[in-house]
Length: 315
Ligand SMILES: [Zn+2]
Image 1: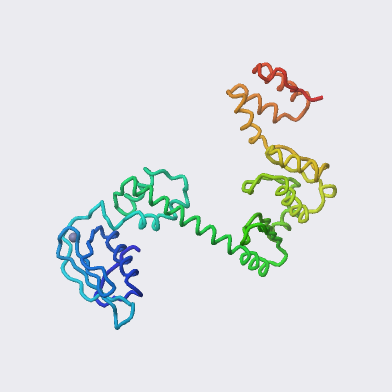
Image 2: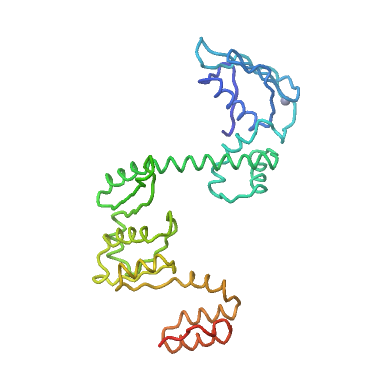
């Protein structure tokens, strides 16, 4: 809330909502408060630093609705940066988006963000607890999204009937648990088959376990969309995940399966580092003929003795 206000006569559905609103009001305006009475029959709150400001609220007409009955005096205190109203629960709830955007945010950066955005100086421990709370909220939101996945599927199919969505859940769990999803809109298929080169990059970023069953399931769903390898001559690019390489060899032995050089290089440099080898690696990789390729591979062999007993040339 940007500029919450308090006015005599304002009503709230219950005391809890009133107290949350009061917290928000005080954090935004930089006041700290103290509860004199905190009962279902009445709530009386004053300034923690002794100003004349005082608020009194109580039930309205015998219901749980709470109404502000009196609002007196005013604050003469300065903004307090260590505001007890901005506790870790409050910070956790109010900084969910920041943590969602950057889940690896560290305590110091989170602390700075809180200081900058709501002008509160929270302790490191408070920030730590706030971050744990936001992570819990995010996990709960995610679980909720997974519960809605069938509804999401139905909506897409009702608006775009020739789309292809497959979802599997784990039957061994007591309640259905999301396992894997294949998602393709109609326009994606049309666009790809009519206008694109026959190259498919596979970047399997999120799988429950990198197992053959997941890869075959995914590839079979994909192939049912794009027609056969023999007919279309697809070339696949992937990193060299063992499971994926094996699955390809078994399911589509005639498909061209090539490897992404960036992935290969990141593996290569863990064993053979240095600028010279990096340069040679890219020269070998980007050449267009066998003779040149063998030439650069020989250079790699000479540049690093560890490669000496490897088979580096192709016939
Ligand atoms: Zn005050």
